[in-house]
Each structure stands twice: as structure tokens, then as C-alpha cells.
Image (cartoon, rainbow, N blue to C red):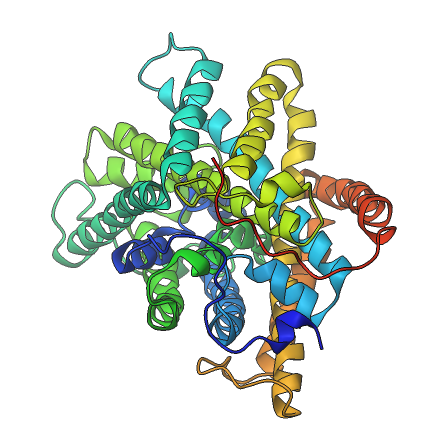
Length: 472
């Protein structure tokens, strides 16, 4: 059994400062997966699948809850910031740990590249004269400094970013319900829950179109697993993490399913189109003249939140890879403020390439890079489920202590989750816009495999070094 496996249940001392407060962890859990996929991408998905999108979010949400409960079981068994990599090495093997760490790092790097570019576009809604690259550079610089100073600053930024998203959706739901139930305002005479099934039924374009919508739905949940990365810097993780993970059901039911039910009851689904936020359309129908500006501000905060999370997670993941001799040793160092400064420097430097790429490379080429993120998160979620299955086998064999927070219905729920992720991968091949992910992924896989066999495998296999506790 590996050293990792032989450690007692509890919190690994990785040298990090436990500076994330309960309210920050809870708000990150609520708002962490609410992003541009819901505020902007839902318009195209509604146009394609109609009201059936509600069922897509519900089914995908069930799979996400299974994944999060599987992660929760592992986190309570042994809470660590490097959770995905540590569990992959302990229960699958060193190559799986190497691959998972670099795939997750790459996923967030390219996501941050896309988000800083998006931030530049959103700011031009108000200030058309500001070059897109200037906003991207300012956003990356501010969030880079925030992450470099202290984990507390990161947590505070993320708290308020999430708060804005949550308040917006809750406000939209309450206002929409008031219009539907009491019939006031310009939309009062036409708003009705019957819109969900009156125009062509619940599956107006057929079940096949609804099935294809699962791709964009799953990508809208990207980032939900970030709470696992915060485990090593959370206060009282044994109490905070289970509560935050269980709240996944509530936030999926309210912020995704509930919001879509209200939106599709306010406005006929045929009036939603790609390129325009369904929230803007609904707000305009209710009679709010500043709808476009309000939603643009919220989408901007969603992009900032995603970039903030990307800098945080890539810094921690790169340090994890370094402690396991899968990345250069200098990345193991913590600054005097207990943050992985070298890893944050390196990750932000690569993210900055997004500004250059956006300026000199056609949009099609840039989409090739970002497509890696979609498969990257599916890989990470799959690894979590496989690790939970193998951990539970060891528990049943009496080799490891049982977690106090268990995945209900295991192993069958875990098998369902894996089958669902595989289905999404297959569905990627049915759309021209997403098929490129299946072409790019093998290339990335070959590069990672070469990196492992040339840079790691040829050296004597060794356990992860003790991380350096502090550095200037």
C-alpha cells in the first residue's frame, strides 16, 4: 500500500493556510457552477430542444450530484487540496495521477484564456473604445494579484462574484413567478406555465435534439468540482464540505431547473434564440428597460469568477504535480503568505497567452484550444467516480476506514455516472461544433503520455516529496 493510502483519515498538512471561511465555501458551492453557460448558452439550447431542456438539466444535475457525493466521500476520508491527483495515484496509479493533474491544469488554463477574452467583449458593451486586449490584461492582472496576496482575498472575490449571480437568478425567479401568478406588467396577460407544453409539446423537436443538448448542459456545470480543490484551505472541512456538497441538489433544482421553468413560462420557447441571453429576453418581456445592461454585468462577473477560479485551481494543481515529481521542483514552494506563488506565476503567464492568441489566431483555431476543456472536465469527473469505486472496494475488504459521508446507492450510482459521462463523450461526435474536441483530445493525450514516459517514468519511481513549507 502506498504512503498516501496508509495515512490516517483526517486533513493532510500541506502547508496551506486555512483561510477560507464557511460563508465563502458555502457561497462558492452555491454559485460556483453558475456561469455563462446558463446566462448566455441556454438561448441556443432552448432554440434546439425547446422545453425539454428542463429535463436535460435535471438528468445532468442528477449525474453531477452523484459525482459530487463520490468526491465528498473521498474528501471526508482524506481532505486534501490536491484531491483529484492524490486519489488518482492512490486508487488508480501514478500515470492516472500525472494525466489527471495536467488535464485539470490545462482545462482551467484554457478556460481562463476564454474568460479574459470574454471579459473584454462584455466591457465593450458600455465602453466600445476600450480595446478588448486591454480589458483582458487588466482582469488577469487584478485577479493574479488577488490570488498571490492571500487565499482570503481569493475567497472574498469569489464570494461576491457568486453572490451577484445568485441574487440575479433568485430575483428573476421571484419576479417571474409574481408575473405568472398575479398577472401584472406587460407580460401578465400572456405568461403561463402552459407555455412549457402547449407549443409542440414538451419535446417539440424530438427526443434526439434534446439528447444532443446534454453536451452544452454538462459544460454549464463545469467548475462544480472546484470545492474539492479548496479542501486543504477550508476551516473545519469535515463539517463544511458535506453541507456544501449536499446543497448541490438545491442549487440545481432552483438555479437551473427552476429558472428555466420560469423563463419558459414567461416567454414562448420559440422566441428564444442563440446569441441572446434568455434572461435578457425575459426581463424585456416583463418590462425592465435596462435588462441588457443588467445581464451583461452579471455575465461579466461570471467570467471574472471563472478566471478567478482558474488562477486559484491551476496554482494549487501545478504545486501538487511538483510535489509528486510530475512538474519542476520550484513549483513546490509556498510564499511567506502560504500561497503557491511560483505555480501562480507560471499559470498566469500561460493564461496571458490567451490575449496574444486572441489577437493573432483566427477564432476557429482558438476554439480548438478551448475544446480541450470540455473533455478535460469529463475526464476529471470520470476519475473521481473510478476512485470512489476502488476506495469503497478497499473499505469493504477492511483495508481502509469508511468515510462518514458516503455516496448513496454505490456502486450502482457510480456506474450510472460513468455511463452518463461516456454518453456525453459519444454525443460530442454528433455536432460539428463539438466534434473538434474528439480530434484535439488524442493529440493532447499523446503529449501528456510523452511527458510522463520521458520526464517521469524514466526516473526511479518515488513517493511525493514533502512540500516546501515556505519561501520568499
